[in-house]
Length: 433
Image 1 (spheres, rainbow, N blue to C red):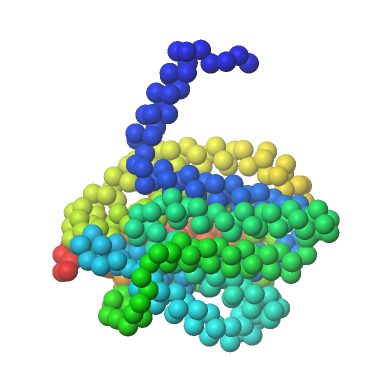
Image 2 (image 1 turned 180 degrees about the vertical axis):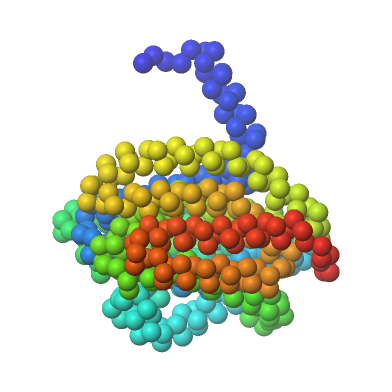
């Protein structure tokens, strides 16, 4: 292989320039750090799969599933509302959100203490030990607190700061797992769980330091007007996310109770790679949450409708082509990564790949619905999807196993995404601000 000629060098440079000119700076910044995060996550996932037996990895799947539920219901819902409210106020020339961030973070700490009291109930639902459930609750709320720190930076459009903090946790986890293997030559479930928690504490504290460094914090807890207004607005968002996370968790809950730990591990692997394929989705949504919270989206239904239609037109072909290629290649790359003991996860993964395409094509919908403040309608559509999800999982999982869980998850998301698209297109209401 020789060096690039001068002509080839300038062609590559021109291509890079054109790509950069097509991708907005905010998207490219978030994409870079999110892709970096997913590289770390992929490395962590492969190591855990390779060095843990299926029964132990099943415990990790349940631990991360329950912690994701806690984060999804509380952390994500409050962070979504915080970004939407804070960005809109900022775009209208109003005050910053430091005091609001403080109050919301304190509320999350209080909620985490209350949630620990629900550990016995959650242990029965997820078929887990009480201790692991408590660790899951703690980890879930730590992720929620980290997400609030990221939300603060994102609402100010400081995507580089947000991306750097988001990767600290994964770096610590990867280094810790490597140390365990070098010293003990094995990975224990409890050691991995405690490592996840410790890494999250470090990341949260560093985020707080970056936010409050050189800031005036005097009287920061005196004025609760913005906090009350945001919480009032977030109630329907929280209801929506409770419904959304219930049907996101329904597959794991049903598999845990109707099938074996081996099935939980198989589905966990398929779902983990599904999540990794959604690498760009959090980046896209992070930017969209900020963009769609600005005045032009909040005040104009035509602007919202046009944006959704343009998004669909620009994404459908590349999404379709990518999904076809991944499905065709999955039988080649997954056995090499996971080992042949997990080959039964491949069909479920292929089904979930269809869901990846749907998620990217309809990525703008939820942010658009929230910018229009159609929270009740969003909850209604999520409730329909949840009802379909519960009934289908209960009916089909005992017959078709994890493949039924994957198919039900995808169809449920499709119902929600397509119905929100139709709602945005035919929405006639003018928003009064």
